[in-house]
Length: 408
Ligand code: CTP
Image (cartoon, rainbow, N blue to C red; front, side, top):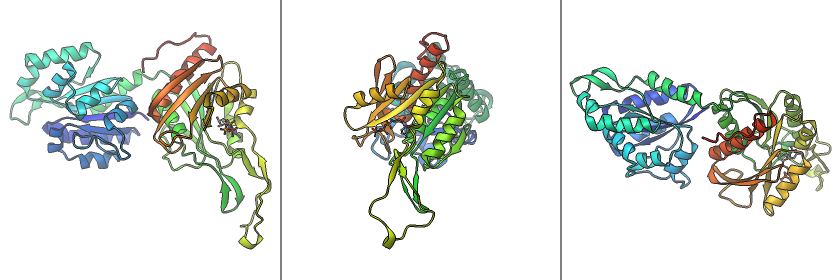
């Protein structure tokens, strides 16, 4: 599932952007929308908000639901930015780096591939400034989905009609395909909490939302990896194109991970596995009057440590450490003890990152002692940073040397 940012600018063809969004959605991709002020006069943001099930970024609405700065959040999360329709004015702004509204600011903040699907009057399309600006954009690597020829809304006949939605979608998917840098990798990921049964209605669990693990799964899928997700109970939608094995307890998670380990190139333990389970869960609901104050607990198996022992030399094993203090020291120790290649450490004492938050800030600790800080960003961007590190580790292990392609 790719994360697509759709820019809509002010032309009559703006209504066709709804169909573009719908086609991406039908293909299982996640779409976020940014509109210029004029675009909102042609089609209301509510239409796009309903279709994308997310806030639409406009000049009038620069912030997300939790106060996040949407132009940075959407730019950071997206795998590709497509502007359809794109007016002559926005083409000029992109060429010159003008950032005077929500859409052009987002474009400057976005570092991935950009496609534009121009739509305008035939004479505007052929004008020297427009063609000159397009030349600048093409040289910069921007993709142009050429307009078609036909009846134009202005009454003229000729080139300038927005390419048809399926053609725009196909062009975007082609660009994404070319960036599938993890296409040969088989990745096994665990995510979410585990639930350890006390009786048929009660359990021990933790506050993990599964968001970080799911972000890794979605990013890996978007980059072409073949992904198996072993998921504890979470309130997130099943990512499309991924084999999902739902589990509840640590024991079930261990058996799912152990049985799939051999066929994976990379194993990522993002799950927050409960460390304890009831020694003897009751088959019947424990009644208040019979309830002892103390419940006897035993340790669950350490799944990651087991995977570390079974690890082949060509496999990359990644663990996560949630700490409240001495983050690097504790995480470094876990990395060694569990024979992992990489540990992702985050500080869960902060409320703005980790657990249920949409953003995270982590340190990547490598087995050779290197440490890298990944600055606070949406979990999708953090996921891509983790995958960049995984990709380099896998390349080094499989004898292809350290991969320096960090173009994402
Ligand atoms: N892990 C596991 N099996 C467990 C517990 C944890 O596989 N029974 C994995 C987690 O998925 C994570 C890493 O181990 O990748 C976390 O290590 P751990 O030592 O359990 O860290 P914390 O849960 O933070 O534990 P501690 O209470 O020791 O800080």
